[in-house]
Image (cartoon, rainbow, N blue to C red; front, side):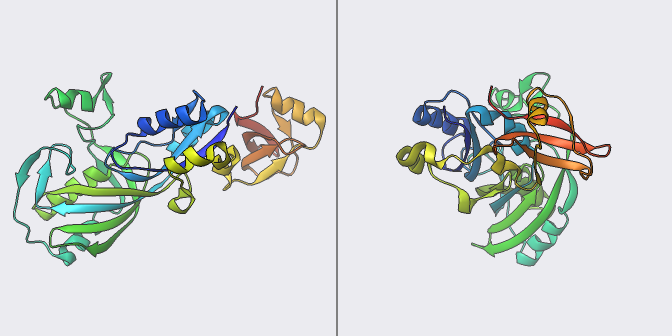
Length: 289
């Protein structure tokens, strides 16, 4: 059965779940999940987990993400991007210097109000489901972190490109909307391409057409998600048996921290935490039955 990670360059017009459904059909594997939703209009890096690798989805969702985005000034829409209904148009007097100055105010720890057209749940209902019925509910601001925010080229007097490295939960649509409010002319997202997610970049991404032609050969090993952690190999059959039974093992002298743990024959067994002088306790197991 296929197991591993695919780094898909998501095409425009597809939902992230559309991509997963396509992959289920190509690889004939029911267990397929993605590591971080992209809106249909967006393109770029979508990590997809196949087979036993779906156990690692949670680790992909929590990492930093990087985007190249297009901000259109003078426009306010109900979805905060150009696919929505236009609510307002305003004259644009801001220039490049004004946009750069506004961007500076959004770097670091900020708070965002989730857009109504999002999958955030309030009282068990997804916001986009309420929005489609014409309802708007109060949403509490949520903390996010903008690690890097860089103004790129101006494509016109109203259209600007920027690069954003941000934390989980950041809405680039909302960032564009809030930038527009700061500048006093309104703003909406007109293009979005994710260039990095879960540590994987566009240079590593493949298309659905590539997958159709090459199949399972494009699957990356599950441990490629955790390459930023050091590796440890168990030292004896007894230790490996304990790990496979979910029990802690002692590796005296091991520095506290998170490790990739491998069996004596090189099998990736689990992600573990070392503490208390070298006691390794499993965070999550990834070996087969």
